[in-house]
Image (cartoon, rainbow, N blue to C red; front, top):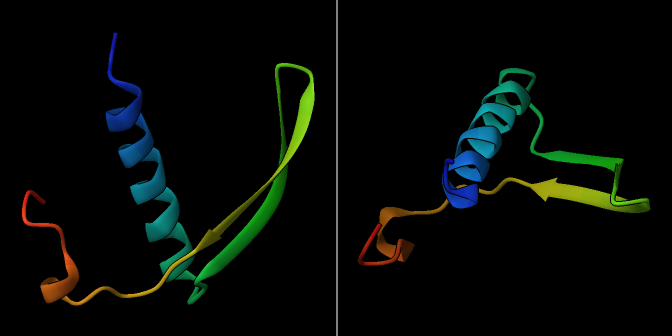
Length: 56
């Protein structure tokens, strides 16, 4: 089974590419998981290489 972190990285990368293709840097939606509704938000902002963690 794949790591949730790896799966999440892939899903967020794909979502980011789709948003940026449409010149969007924000997304909000509602999702249901385990019978509970959640509001999800994604904010994209560029990060300079100097701000990246050393182990990135």
